[in-house]
Length: 206
Image (tube, rainbow, N blue to C red; front, side):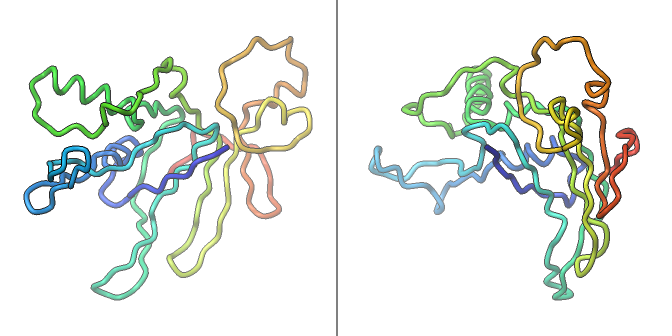
């Protein structure tokens, strides 16, 4: 299974920063208060998006295409955007936000809670929230024309068949003595139309 998330690129340095903005939410107060059906009246609340269930594959889409209302044209955001090879997504999940809110309340913060006390908050090990970069799709060109190509990390099972696919989140397992095919596992490949060849990941820039 997989889940897709679209995040902002403009004025953002990297993935962690834009994910923090993604879950930050909007405070509903004053005339814009939220009506609580259980309470029977309006209350301050925070409206936000966050991750409730983690998929095997997490697809993150960068919003590089925007409409400029001053020029009435489509624009592409070409600024540099950094992302890690490994990502801890716990701060952007329901349970991660609940933990942060508990810490804030213990520190004396009066911010309204965004997690209902009636909703069970699951408990998982830290390994559950870890993702490893498996592939990158790149658009080269403008907002009106361009070309797509990709970088993909070869999985261990694919090293035996020379096929590449999406990486699944899993715990490391003990492996047998590596064969020649196993030595190709984990390497990165570039796919550009008919060109498929090894790629040095240290050269990757977003």
